[in-house]
Length: 105
Image (tube, rainbow, N blue to C red; front, side, top):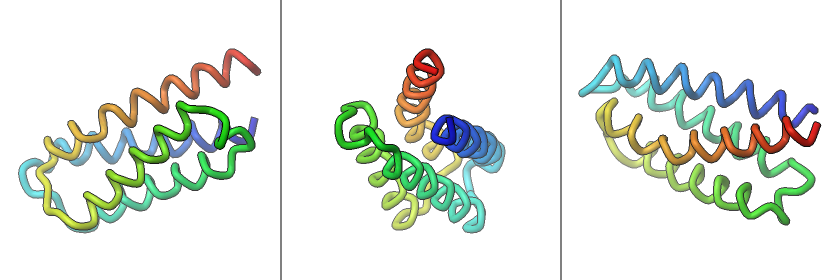
């Protein structure tokens, strides 16, 4: 239950930040990029601390994707549209994980 709550909370925060990034396109403030990277890191921690993260292929895939996106954010100046587009697969996978865990609960 804690896993689902934490994942939902950070996912919602990420969605809010990405909506904000889209509004700031083409030039994102560095603070917004930092906050997106931070929340992505928090999502990574939540997924890593999940008991089944080593067994669940979907979680392993999301972890790899989140880490790649976070590194990319830290190293490049991207437009809001590019950031929003880059995070679509991560958001979709997190939604799938949340859906599966809500059904199991």
